[in-house]
Amino acid sequence: MAKTLEASFEELEQIIGQLENPEVSLDDSFKLYNAGMKLLKSCNDSIDKVEKKILVLSEEGDQTEHEL
Image 1 (cartoon, rainbow, N blue to C red):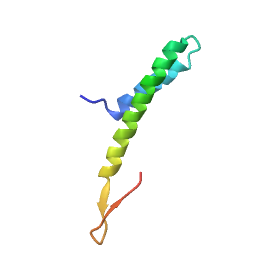
Image 2: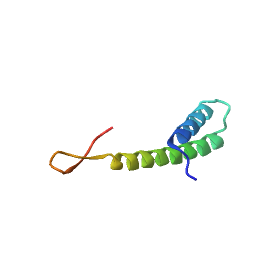
Image 3: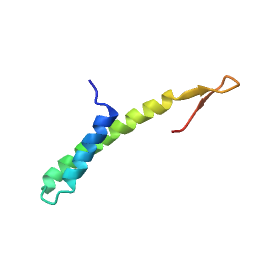
């Protein structure tokens, strides 16, 4: 089962908190950074899917996309 967008954001916040810790090694920082970037891409993909679903029929019957 895929993570919810909210769960992914919470995990990103935790990763950011760990990256801000000066005691985290460079190797661990790199691993955390990579994990964060994968999560960020997943979040962006989820948001893109939702934006594409937000289509509204205009008065003429044409489909128009509304920005969030």
